[in-house]
Image (tube, rainbow, N blue to C red; front, side, top):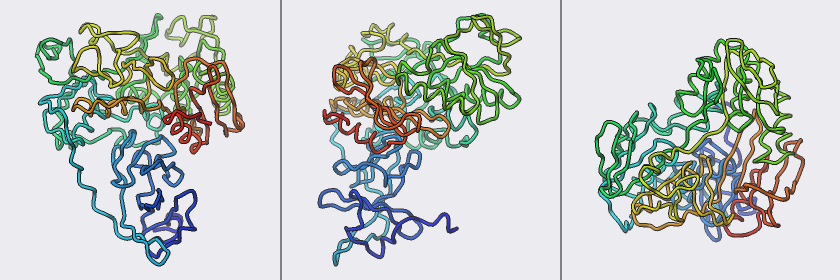
Length: 508
């Protein structure tokens, strides 16, 4: 091991004193492996020092009871078992033996994986069908097996690839800094070994609610005892002439991202239509490939609707520092051989065009089944739809959010995964309420934006720190109540805000 790769902190095998702990944690090593000591009450735990999602540093995380939360994307691990209890992490962290003697704490060998704890399933359906191969569908299938469900699981996905790490498709993967083998959430062996019948390129046509069966496009019927609808969302299409030209792309699937990457190889100039999160993440990734990028959008300030004007101006300035050229308060009238024709008459020549004008939930299946719809599939607090035995999760689900007091639908990866996990337990009779605080992150060059909560409107934004210095936390308030918090490089504060909102406390 080179000196630069040497593990940090003291040798925990040789013993450390509690006085060396900071905020209940101490980062050290056992041999070449970095280990984190965590004090929770009278207990001291020794666990792997990095999150199993994106390798985030758990030493900078937040301890809540007997759990620790990752500062980057808020994954949560049980300190007693190492289990990943909340997405976006699924793999457990390592555990080590701990002994206290002579006023010191000694860390020993790695402990064998904790045996799957016995579950008390209240209901044991024989067959569960999941429609959708995205975040919610995958998380549900994985959790069903973790909960020791031994029945049949069938997952139907209209996509050609097994479930992938979708957020990466507009970030590092599109930028060329993430390897292709990072993208699948699990290898093909995972589905085979856990006996998850993953059927790719298969579409459901309708649901026979009374007969408890999904009818496929080819007419085949698939019976179920419990059904999860996790059909996700699809990109909005540009309603202009030329939107179907071969150099015009949307970005949702792995195939979409691969098509953009292929086009980017010979492209010198790209136009991104839409100053959304996806649009601007794509713009940053294309700039990483040294392509000239123009962004067209109808808004005056990018992402003002979600982040407010000051944060929106910060995001614009960040992109302009990296060479992105904005055409705001502008629209597209056509796309032709010359390029993108703006409503003002200006033409932007482009080799590559990416449309990022939002998505819409895939509701057709639920509508045909007669489920209650309100700008999404209406579910109760357990994520069950108006039809008993049928659940919905992810981009299509509109649920009663106790934090905002509203029925909300969000299109965030972590929310979808956590909903899938709750649905899995509820299909087995748990009756667990989904009350997680929504969370998402966005990456622009080397600047991450974390967002906790949900604020569709506000009457006040309280700024802590300096936005343009990329060191800030913003509170989005309505009638004096903080509904959401956005932050840049304030990971600990973001974690604390989420924990406070869960407990019904003011987050700042």
